[in-house]
Image 1: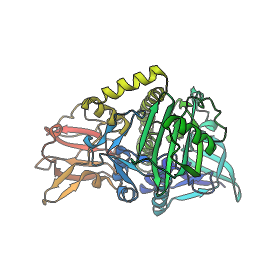
Image 2: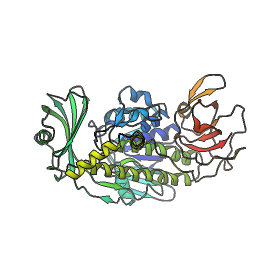
Image 3: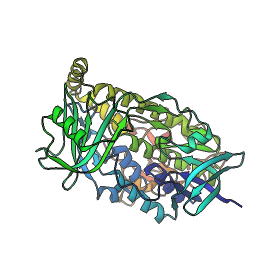
Image 4: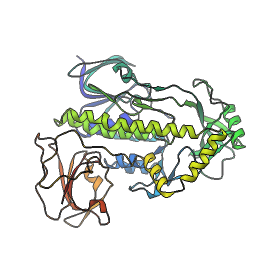
Length: 487
């Protein structure tokens, strides 16, 4: 008989691993099935954005990432000259963390294994069948054929997702119309600044340090943008394009990794089909502009993880799973529009260069710069109220609070000690947060869900005007407000 799991996660990248951590934390029986036999050593993504660091902090994992990464106070939009100022953002992490994807994956896999997750490598899913009670997967591994049965399956298996294809979920969008190249190389004459971006009528070059002695060079060359995606990249191509655009090849040699990538752009028609769900690149595909793909995938995982665990373990209504697609697909759509806009700005025509100059000048305005920084960092993401029964409280519920992201507030407890809000969410459960001086009756749900709510009574810090008149709130496990009520 096939092994029965609560959830099978197909794909062992950052999205699948964080999702598995969330599920295991809640006591869900979960396995990760990854087709690659070994961890990927190359790092397509290089950054964790502020909201992703908040997601990790919500589970007490941020320190291990901060120890391995390097904070950068700015980000970029389409390599424009005016950088996005992350230092002004309302977060405990007002920066981009430079950390290679391979390190991020290794840290997440270590945490998953700490929580008892089986990460099975060399497992390729080839068939999927779902019925009213579960999903059956079949495939091959180094040990031969395998079969798994699970109550739910999540496809976190990348842009070419087998789960999405086997489930018949459409993935509409556009084919590749232009390509670019990257190379991790040794530079004999590196630039004087740690990271540079050059855009001119000849194209665009970005150079960033990867590791001691190794730099990443990303090139948008108008003369080579029609090169087929499958055409191998050579060091000579990289040198020639870089020299023509930047005036030097920086003495590049000893390539560690060379890759060509394109602007194929797609968004899954839906993120849920019965007992099959999609997350990360399996749900959205785009030009890697602004380093957003991995980050949005992690945020997908956080949104889905607690909801799936609640349905599997806590008797939550099925409508909670429907809210995953309703909340996260608009984020994927915004990601698509954002990266399409950046791709358009990365051209080298006279018209595009004029538009770049205008946009760069506009971004000097602090308010607009802040809006773009909030969007890139995903701190602007909010949701509407969940389609589940409202809690019963003894004062009116406040409009406009449901779905709002909460900052990691420093709360003062009755004994005089301070506690960060996010630390109270480490167990991955709902939090009933009372902000009144005197205790009141805790909120109640008629259906009895959720049943494992944590309770905390504390005073909010002064200076947070938005909390004036708020008596308390129910905080979702992902750090967004469920409901808030009046004082």
